[in-house]
Length: 127
Image (cartoon, rainbow, N blue to C red; front, side):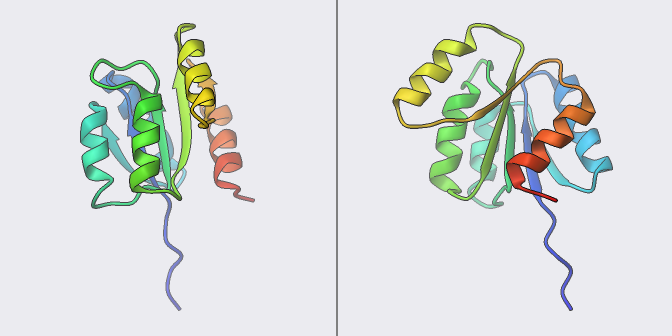
C-alpha cells in the first residue's frame, strides 16, 4: 500500500528568521516545506513542485503576498492560501483582492505556533 502523500507547504517571507521559524514549526508537525525569501522564487518553484498550501507574508518588496497568491492559484489551482501580516496597510490590498474576486485567509503577526497549526488544519480541512 502506498504511503499517503505529505502536504507540501511553501513558506514565503522576506525576513529569513520568520521563514525559517515557520519552516521549523511545520517540519515538526510532519509537513514537507520549501522556504523562500523572494516571492518570485516561490512562483518559479510552483511550476515544477505543486504546493498544497502557500503560507506567505503580505508585505514583501518584490511582490506582495496577495499578488503571489493570485499567481500561484493560476499555476496551481488546488493550492490553498494562508497569508499573514503585521501591517495594517494590508486591509486596502485585501479589499482590492476581494473586488477582483479573490478572498484569502489572513493571520496577524506574530502568530502563535498552536494558532498557526489550527488554522492550517482548518484551511486544509484536516481532522
